[in-house]
Length: 267
Image 1: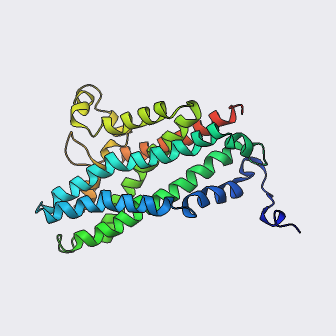
Image 2: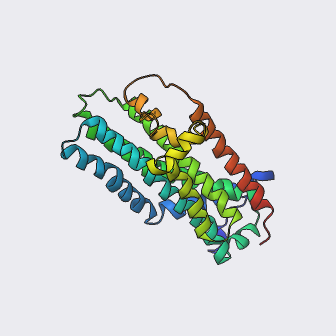
Image 3: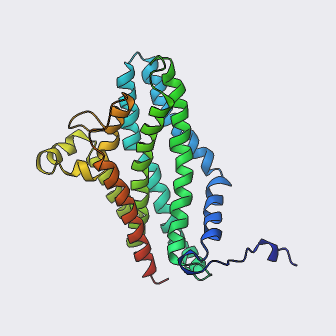
């Protein structure tokens, strides 16, 4: 058997799952077998935990430091998800890799799902699990142990749902546009419209219901200054779960639309 033949893994899957395992292995390798994983982890620690450490050291109250942590998570984490997602599809489309890969025994739904799963898992470790674990130890002493690991897990779970929203949104937009500008622009405008006070005021005045169907209220809500994550941090019951359900449904919808669009793309 030749050396090249030993690298081939026969695909026995049929239907929409054809080629999913091989494509998923390739996408996971692009994250974990390169420097991408530790670069993402380093940026996440510097941005999230570094800012939290500076706020605590500067004498800020714990609740204000925690609120700043959520603000940075709401504004900064989507940038990582959007950048990674758009480069994943647009980079392959521009280089011709997408056409080559899809000429193999690989169904197009599996192509999109492999990218969603691989990037979702990579970002989960780099931007959620690692910063969340470090934040727990950073806040253990200032809060006197009142902020339990379970509360931190709930807060970071909302952060992850927010991240998945923009990851799937960017993947979907990358199937519609050939340039990075529209994908990055549309996704960032949506990400920053809700949290930014000067942009959010017209939204609060004319279409306040958007806060219930978009992920803005998960981490920060300038209307009431009490994001859902704030209730979890204080051990209080959530006043509503509508934004959580709506955001999860958006993620499913974006993924479905991306699969539909890539299935009609001619390479």
